[in-house]
Length: 486
Image (cartoon, rainbow, N blue to C red; front, side, top):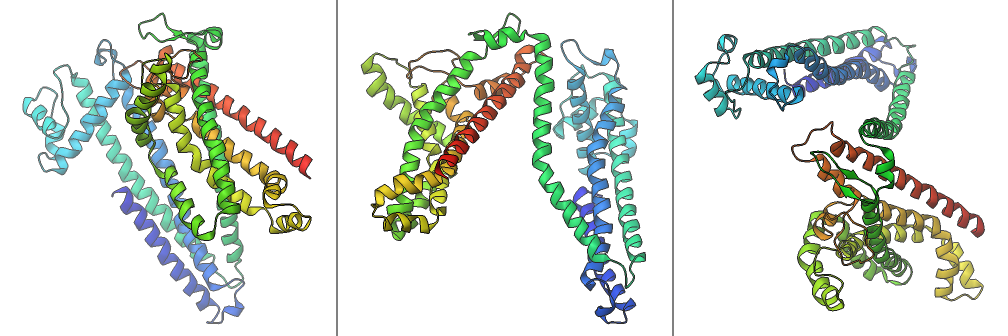
């Protein structure tokens, strides 16, 4: 049974439980719901929850554990002779999964039966051709044991799916029967339903926390692994970034960090003034008709894919800056530069600053405006001395969001600023950022356990700590100005 069909069966069973549970409660109350402790719907909800929730939790846990268990058991079947020179067990296991998928495709297409599969061996030439037609290309260097391992992998996966189907349906039926047996007029069904909702809310609130913890732990573990292979002193103090996957790499972070800060600074230099001025105009001076047209048009910028901004930087902004500024001033001859990426990224960040700042300014109570006007202040004085101080914490939050967005941007930097890791004050030179190098170090045919690959996790952790420091600084500034205002 497919996963989607299994979930539908569980939901259908739970839905039937809701109807039967509600009717059973009314029947035991003689048709008078006033005799019941809870409303009839709560009794139905209790049956629905007992039938659906344990079964779906079992399904989720099974889907998480089964692949790990099968991988562990099947990988133990491989011998050192099955791993070609220059390859790894992970690559061989990838071949095992691909061959197993090919078996499934061939059987689903009617080109093979289960009996034929059991009789198949790695030296059968026509079987290789059939697998190639199914999209699985096998070379002559595929060991017979790998071929048999793929068959075992498929058998274990099919057995696991069958066991999963039986276990989930039995669990749903058991919960269904248990909940029905508890239905009595004095059964506190409402309390059961409300406890579930409270647990659901707590679980939802924990998702963000657990996700953050998972991200931090994954970065920390791989970073520790990196620093066992490469000295931390060289990483944090070296001014050279020159990864060589054959050895002798210089993996200093400062050229990347400098490019990140430089591009982000130029982007904020463009987006913050324009965004805040646009927000002040839309919130305080624009008519309703103008605001209704201008704000949606401004927010369209936030919906444009970053790759489109990158192409705009590569084709339009970069050549324009090179022809009209860099070359006449003798500052460079490349269309890829920090200024190109910073300007285009600043345009992209304008709606982040303006939209949030506009909402914050509109949230300032009208009574504060009226009080300022009553004291004789002009409109501009009210904006400067009353509204902006009151909205300052929210505006700082908008700027912080824009800064985080700028630090994490990749595509605009790739197409607009280039990939040169160097430290220079010239904004018309090509540079790169931390995020670009994280992508480049993790892509391609590289050995994952090498320092040149693991350095991506150290870069990611450093970037995380840096943005966390920005958040702490912003909170300090917000509290300081808020206290002065109050």
